Amino acid sequence: MKKWHITAIIGVLSIALMGLVYVQSIYIKRGLVIQSQIFNQYINEALVRVAIKIEEQQAYQTLSRPNLETIYEQVQSINGNCGLSLQYLNGQVVLDIDKAGELYSFSGSSFNEIDSLVKLANLGPEIESELTGGLLNGYNNLIEDMTMRFLYGNAAKPIFDSAQIFNYLQYELDRMEINTPFEFALLDGYSFRPLFSSFDKKPLSAQHQAYSTSIHPSPFSGEHAILLVDFPKKRSFLLQSNSKLLSSSFLFIILIAASFGASIFIILKQKKLSALKTDFINNMTHELKTPVATISLANQMLNKERVREDAAKVKNYNNIIGVENKRLGTHIERVLQIAQLDKENLKLSKDMVDVHVVLRDLLTEFKLRFDDANTSVSTSFEASRSDIRADQGHIISVFSNLLDNAIKYRREVPLEIALRTFVQKDLLCVEITDNGIGMSSADQKKIFTKFYRVSTGNIHNVKGFGLGLSYVKTIVEAHKGEISVKSELNKYTSFLVKLPLTNKISI
Image 1 (tube, rainbow, N blue to C red):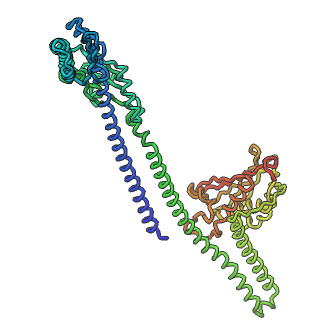
Image 2 (cartoon, rainbow, N blue to C red; image 1 turned 180 degrees about the horizontal axis):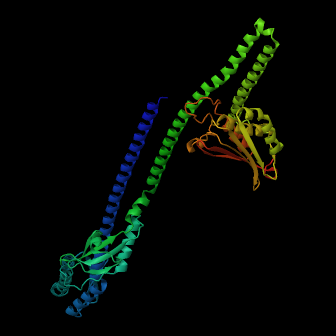
Image 3 (cartoon, one colour; image 1 turned 45 degrees about the horizontal axis):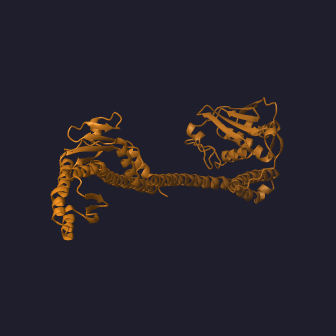
């Protein structure tokens, strides 16, 4: 995949993700606005119902039964002992008349209807005159007087009960399923003087932003009060009401963003891996082609008559074929080892291994290569214990790779290698330090990556597949150990391998 293809994909996905986040944020904002409007509507409806209840309560207090009984007593005192009894029962006016020991009862919805019924009964002019001129007129006059006092404010000043108003508000809000704390106040309709208030030192400007409604205890008198209600935690209540929507939206956005990031990471990683594999294939082709070409050339020389007659040349060419064949086999073995590690089929045959013995044997094996590279080796085996339980073949390969890298990545100066062992807690530590070309901090983070090779600039004398250190790390970790590196360009490189001693690793 070309670089501009990846750039285009990342750009398109980024725009799509930002567009999705923007659209989702607009959707959430609109949802909150709608929720706020519904909240406002519910509150206004609740306040109207509370105002009606307060007005009804005031009306009831004015037209309560004690007042009606007072009116009845006044009517009775006007008419004296006339044998007439007037009552108001179950929404009906009831008139009882006692005439010569005989009881007559009339009921109707109004005084005029009662008057008509009495006249139809033909009880006599005396009864009709007393009824119309006395009882009914007096009752009408008192009711009219009380109604005028109620409507035009001549009645006693209304008394508001703050606890009752709180209960009204609480009941109406519960009906609306609005269960957030609220504050309320009742103000005089003209002076805005608080009759009572539960606002906690809230400034007047904040009170004016509260929900309000008017209360008219005496509708035609002009007297009124203003009920204020405020919800200090309104925003958190609205957010909580939309918590499922908000959390699900946020979760999906996070999942999409994470998927987007993971996709970009995988694309870039695959592109880098593809480049490394291409470099590996080219390098492997060269590495395998070289010994094959050398073997072929040696074989051609052996087929010549004059060469076969020279025993020294035959021996030399046979040695060349053997060396190149061994080299070819080594390359193939390394590739097969990595393929085996990729399939996670690595099987370790763990035995007791003395690391000091392994290191001494390797130094002997590498002696000719050290001499050829003008190398001096110093050892410091400080570890009091060096026995580990491990796969000896793989452990030998680990340290062999590290020594081999020290020789490959040397400078044009005499190579110096320092090999040191020591015990740290229950770990055997093996430190291999050289004064080679070193590496940058960026290379130090990547050298254990498969197929990665440290760049040597314009010098191409370093051969390999970029598999050695990846193999080393895999084997060390398979033995429950760890490996780290410290280096500085053109100064030194130091690898530290830590392996559990025998009392800390299981078979």
